[in-house]
Length: 444
Ligand SMILES: Nc1ncnc2c1ncn2[C@@H]1O[C@H](COP(=O)(O)OP(=O)(O)O)[C@@H](O)[C@H]1O
Ligand code: SF4
Ligand SMILES: [Mg+2]
Image 1: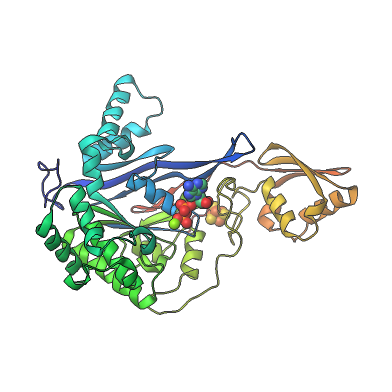
Image 2 (image 1 turned 90 degrees about the vertical axis):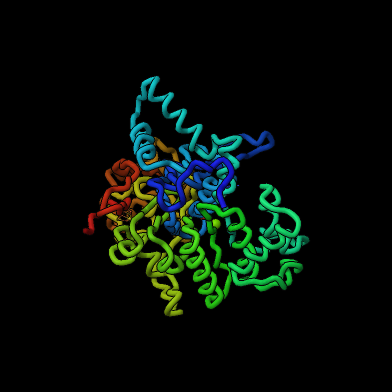
């Protein structure tokens, strides 16, 4: 089958291209308050994420709940419009290199702007319209975690799986039914399932129906958002095997989203680890498992249940996930990192968070006057409370790295000034071939 508007393209797998290039992608949700619903801040659900997916490749996107995986998947699918950056589809390698070179220029000339505009109009998902958009809708399909929510409960399987074929005028009548039977056979279901409703199936079977529907238009890319997270371990393995077989047969590219690293271990060619909207580490799967460079990746590995061994090691990842509306300075993981250093981004909010955690202490805090995220006066109820905080900040009750980063600690009656060394956001650095991590430590 050949996609409409796609007839001039050479066969899949023979092209020198990337299926998908995500560039500096950001998606911010406004936080509104009051009767006038004034915007008082933004949840930075996705904040400057870049990666590629090659034809037939699986990229595993992993991270804890709330780190922005689904939001990113929705932007990739064109279901949500990015705030910054873009998602590019179907770029030949040379064009992708040209795009990267144009995007890296801070002050573009008029001709460079016009060249970028042309590339955007042709390849950027949120700029596509007409034939380009239809082609993308065929070529990028999504399978969600909750098959109950994504399958219309009042439609028969025949109509659910056949709908994309009908909408894109690929088939009708008895030909449509036969195409649906073929698709069902590919996912291990049969003709006897055509005239049943979603509630008449098990969770694993419903996920097979979702996969059949996603395959109907012979896409190049399938976004799998926690496709096995709601399933029992044995059913999970069956669905993973099915996805793997379908990928081999059809040369599909997958963006496999999961909170559980071990699920994608045998599926993914590359892993992208996200933390509070940003990429913490990305690299080839075996490198991420054998030589992780980011302490967050290590913690995720240590806390992942092993699908094969059926064991769960729960030693790692303590502490609250930060609020994406107020991401920590420096390295976003510094509030939970066991090996954080003085240069990891200690800030006034760390003191405030610490006060919140210590029972009773926060009650005496009356206000915070910030000069910057790293410098503020904390006002207390009385002088004793102020003196007590200062003494604690000098003691071993707080992490040594945080104490070392504290440049000034001044007590003035009921107020305490805390000033840390300002640091920039920790950027991704190269750790090996196609391996990057955002950590100040060099653990090579
Ligand atoms: N439509 C929305 N409006 C406001 N906030 C949202 C919306 N969708 C997601 N978020 C917030 O964005 C962050 C990332 O969410 P999500 O992408 O669902 O994470 P994940 O899939 O990794 O669990 C969360 O803090 C979530 O509450
Ligand atoms: S930069 Fe590295 S060491 Fe520092 S807090 Fe982040 S992960 Fe930990
Ligand atoms: Mg999600």
